Image 1 (cartoon, rainbow, N blue to C red):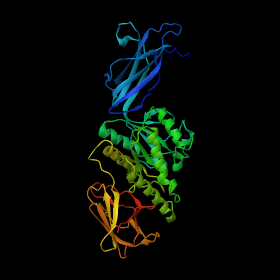
Image 2 (cartoon, rainbow, N blue to C red):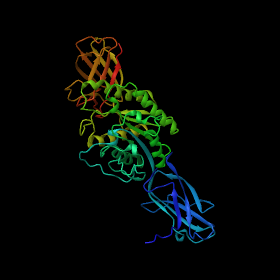
Image 3 (cartoon, one colour):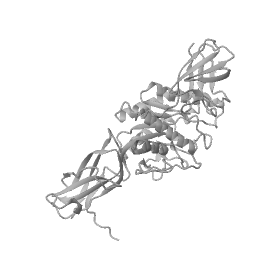
Image 4 (spheres, helix red, strand yellow):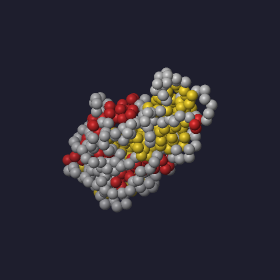
Length: 464
């Protein structure tokens, strides 16, 4: 069958079905361009393109009917300004002679774009637990208004797996196996539920990827592909970046991790033109596949992530200590859903000002008590008290300067602090760690007011 001749207004760039536009101060600008055609043999260009945004569900106008700028050669363009947060919206176009007076409803047809949203777009970077390799069963339904930019280069309603490399634009992102559930759909659903703001997700992650693949000076690798991915999605700057990576770099002691991640953070802030671009770090999870010789490397990565949250503005860290896995290292589906909701709580608290959202306790300081045999560790972000309801194992470790372990006999929590007890004197230059090993304690210390676990730390100074 012969295809029909195109006619009317054609949208050629600027908006795709199911796209999320990043809002700023509650509104977004949608820039469209294209061409128009009636009779290709008619040189008359005395026509006007009209554009309007409507609510997809009610058909009510969201904007006035706008006149596009007409460009010689039967081209047009238009910036639709002040489109409010929300959706789904529909963009309608039509064509009419400039001097005509009949209603626009009887004009020549034009292209439309459906299920358009204005909200917040988040960039997801990392390796397998960012990609999501959970293969067990649970319900984490998709929801319109939580959208994703697929690897193939199109917007869609977000669904698992977020990292599906079918027809990918970037072969470098292809994972070796089929991927599974990740935390970010549950994240998006909580944000949408709490704020009414639509969410867009852009995944730039790959299982097993070491941090240096993301370095900005590694030409044609992940960082360059990430920028191209955002440009293809129509995003100049995401609202925030989520980082869940580190297992590969914890296979051996690599003290450059902190410096390397700081390089990536600073590069994104420079390239996106926002020196305060928020970063949220999901601390690396447990791993049962290593023997104890890898524990110090695991602790180094955990502490590097912890340090960056302490030292850089608008960098936040959340604990993953209470996650359970579907194999040696990959979080299962229930833990992924939990992490997504926990991450949403951080965004709601720090970016949206929700006072009813809480965050994980973090190390503040450690000091030897007057008896010389006890160490008091103080935490910040504690609502009620640090506790361990089972108290069946020792999640804390004290080392001397030569990394010889000082035996601890017990510990207990008092409000925002814990006291560690030993039968031996705590030596000068001793250091303390908590939940730092690859295979951590089953029940980490937590805040009894929020039930949130502490953020793991490693080799922190103990003051005399």
